[in-house]
Image 1 (cartoon, rainbow, N blue to C red):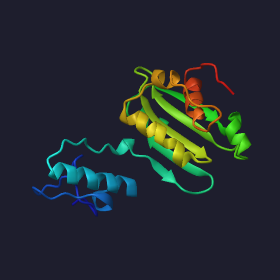
Image 2 (spheres, rainbow, N blue to C red):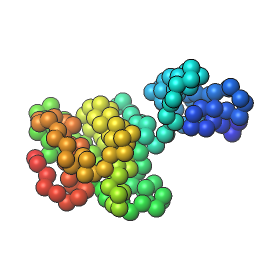
Image 3 (cartoon, one colour):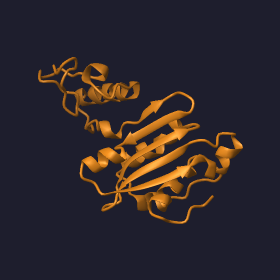
Image 4 (cartoon, rainbow, N blue to C red):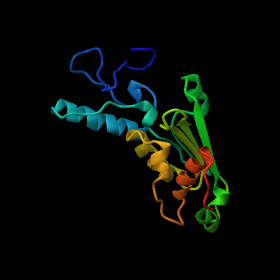
Length: 178
């Protein structure tokens, strides 16, 4: 126990053989989707299946308010603190036709990349339906996506999700399609 939480490893194992801890009792992030994933992972591990460890920095945080807020991975400040040289991309909702058509032109997407490797380190967004849009970046983190992968991806138009593409292009000073 560390203060009020059970100490676990990335597979939710405690210091007691055969005893696992998941969800809020195991610590941050305190999110239902993290706890659910941990429960499935532990059950599959007990059943003898190969599983992948939990990576807290790849779990999306979503705030269901108006406007919505969502993020995954490292902030710009945290990435710099960890020693990364970062490239930052920003794209405003006002530059997206679908956001304007929905009457939701306020908001933005910010992406954080490792300038050396191109690895997606984090994404942060505020605006309409960002709790849905963050999933693209969650998958990107899981698959170790780079800015090149995202730049070469063709996003449907007009959609809110194409702002993911635009924020990457902005990070690398490339042409933005408005």
